[in-house]
Length: 292
Image: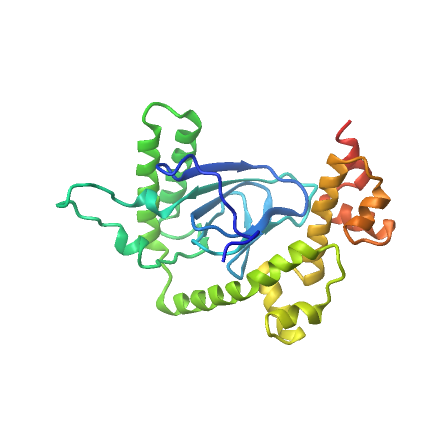
């Protein structure tokens, strides 16, 4: 199922399915909850944040490296929006590490991994055997992408294949971990429609029992599963969508702050202002002044 949680990631083109995003986000949420078919490497360059990947919560700081498998829901949150945060997101389709040739005598050495639903660990331990090789290769990859010298596409493809090799040697998950990951994928699929419902109706009154019924769980088990999957409570998740929509309206319309608060589902202007500052690190009035 493809919905608003599915991200149609901007890649260079179909023949070269690769891109690097250099992010310096502000506010409480530094990466919106989403999923895609691509592999993604997240390298934290500055600051500290919590990344939610496939139901696991990982605190990461400068130098930490994370991996997102194809299809995993993932998001990022910042404890202190006032602190600077910077990270690289390196995104590439599994096909970029494959071997495609019209030569029938050629041997495809990669598809047994890419077509076998190979799953890698989300956290790349700094003390692990291949951490240094991975970070060194990724640094070279980023520099190559920025410089875009002649033939850079060939070099980037080679770097991706090298990264994939280090991952296969040191970070393929065990059979038991694979079963747990598969179970997490099933839970994710079960929750996607419900999460989409919240994204479309965040300005309405959404009750715990209502969304728990959508995934056939008791309110108690729903709260545990929801927090594990998103890293947030239900009300935090709803408020996050309200605040992002409010900021969009503050920056793109002349509606009063009171009207915007009401439009996103916050009845009280005082509670709206408090929640907005909590999530964004500045007041609604400050957001509007940024336009001046």
